[in-house]
Image: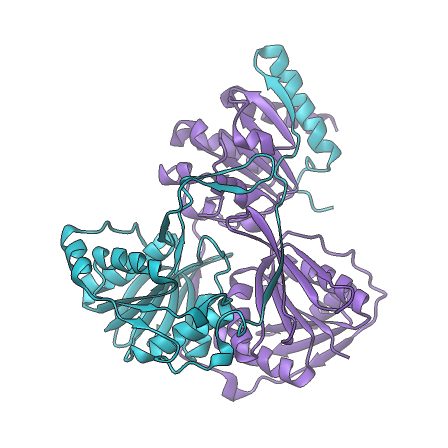
Amino acid sequence: MHDVWILAETGHNGLKDISFELLARGRALADTLGVKLAAVVIGGGLESSEAWRLIAHGSDIVYVVQDSRLEHVTCIPYSRVIEHLIRKHSPQILLAGATTTGRTILPYVAVKVHSGLTADCTDLAIEADTGNLLQTRPAIGGNIMATIKTPDHRPQMATVRPRSCRPLKADPSRSGQVVSELFETAWDDDRFSVEDIRVPEGDRVSIEEADIVVSGGRGLKKKENVVLLDRLAHLLSGETGASREAVDRGWKSYPHQVGLSGKTISPKLYIGVGISGAVQHLAGIKTAECIVAINSDEEANLVAMADFALIGDLFEILPEIQRQIEERRRSS
Amino acid sequence: MHIVVPIKQVPETSDVHMDALTGTMIRSGNTAIINPLDLYAIESALKLKDRIGATVSVLTMGPTSAVKVLKEAMAMGCDAAVHLSDRKFAGADTWSTSYVLSLAIRNLSPVDLIMTGERATDGDTGQVTPEVASWLDLPLVSFLSSISTVQDGILEGERLIEEGYQKIRCLLPAVVSVVKEVGEPRLPTLRGKKRAMTYDIPVWTADELKAEESFLGLKGSPTRVVRIGTPSVIRDATVVQASGEYSLKSAVSQLLDFLDEKGLLTEGGTHA
């Protein structure tokens, strides 16, 4: 049978969250089609217990390709591994995260295996009469949702927006099969190499992966006030984001920019402070689960798009939020 | 050194607003511009031209009107332009588009570097660049945020990835996509504009590219758009006034109750 596959991602702390989100997506599709779900995990030496975590989270088969030359994600060797596995096992669907990894490697593979690829999907389903994968994604700046399919080519490939679904609960009683595949020397390619990683000090950049993002805009008035956002973000164990205007004014660095011109995010909670909500900003947060707007202007676009809005002076509201959260935590 | 910058013509979005009820874009006018993110690729190419000397060619696939964006790129300082235009290209998805671009790039050889924007602001896929690299069997440096050196056929720089800035090294020829951090795009110059006006942009068709017909346009595209919908953006907010001491306290308290109910106030994150 032609199975459903997902490409797992690993970092220095083992498997990344996106791997489990993809398994939840893949599980639903595989069950609808009555086929198996397999995870492909490529890397430089993953703990074998990690393969079993993939099984506990929904995978039936785990294809493991581990080699010291695969320690860093490199486009050509990774693509060659995936191309080889596709030709050997003929999956009907291959999903990867719409991350820098998935967005780099899957298009490279799509050309090699001559199949279609849909970017940044937020919804996946199986078409009843054909069994084709229906891939839904925001387009034209998030203003329309387009549903796309790949009728005549296999595998049907898609990258899936991180945080657009929840992982399944781990079930340690699930059984599965771990298949090791060798990395062939001919697949290595020394034209591109990773030398090092630099993490900007005190300036974490992963707003896409954050559950909670607290963003500020022009309403903050000046750079010194950004600390109010940082404090609230910290209190909620979230990240600080910023509107394009706030970034253009140098209040926050570009990796914090939220919106089509920066990062498209779908956190569980988005708090927009002093942000009126330009179209490109709204499109970048549309899939957030819960949106809170804090603004002095009740007519602001972001207020209309929010689930909850506080209208008033942010310089009064933010400290009050902080005070009340601390109070609640002390008393609980 | 020869740098090719494939660019895309996209609808202007700054004069666009959203219909509050349907969430669709309302375009006042019908202006087409260079994909704003492509300006950063042009800027990076021109910076290299300034630093180490290079010839910069721009390339676009699109209808006759797309000549305008090529002229704009030339006005910024690009040296040459090629327009890929043919009815047969119409309706191409990223797979088919990247095929045509790769043929044109082969025609422009020798090419040392292909530089692109991260993605186009309309299609928003970011797939064409890696696909071009794949057609050409070239190494790909995606999400490049800075270039430290280009010498002896080696590019060194940093990529912006989820974990931070990744220092990389890549042999040329290579395909590179840049993010906004590479530097603010320059403005067109009068001299550039004059040159663009008199420059006769060649048009290459499918025949001239000796393209495989079955790979072109809608027919040659593996993907199909089957449905277009408009997401609703209105969430029906609970709007609470928070000014004055009493109303401030009560409004914030209501917000926290609301968040608490959704499990969003847990200390140490929301991981349940």
